[in-house]
Image (tube, rainbow, N blue to C red; front, top):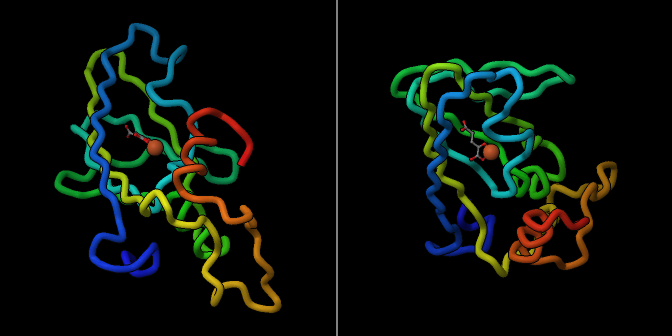
Amino acid sequence: MAEAFGGGDDGLVLIQMVNFYPPCPQPELALGFAPHTDLCALTVLVANGVPGLQVSMDGLWYDVEHVPGALIVNVGDQIEIFSNGRYRSVLHRATVSREKTRMSWPVFVEPRREYLVAPHPRLVAGEIPAKYDYKAKTFENYRYCRINKLPQ
Ligand SMILES: O=C(O)CCC(=O)C(=O)O
Ligand SMILES: [Fe+2]
């Protein structure tokens, strides 16, 4: 993966985050994390066992079951683009609990900032044209547009 996203041992950047969701008296009126896809390549996440992570499929939300000791791995935007749409960046969100504090610890696996966001040339075959064309956009620029809610 490091080779695919820029090459060499330092081809990837790992970013550790901590999410803290305090209890909410009216959880049906709130969300811990609004629906989004992760802009990175891959997310590896552990949570404290309080349910909350949901993934979207065919317009419905599904709870992600907590399996003690298991890691949750999400495909992010960069793998979707790199694979020319063969893998999909998962739409997900986090709900909150009425009684319990929920915590999660994602590690975002990212390309380096100068990486050019594009499908791999070998995955753009004649019958499958490039689904993504960001005109030599760097990952740093992609991230900037996403965080500032600008069009890619
Ligand atoms: O708390 C969770 O389970 C999800 C967190 C999340 O989606 C994120 O940090 O990007
Ligand atoms: Fe996320």
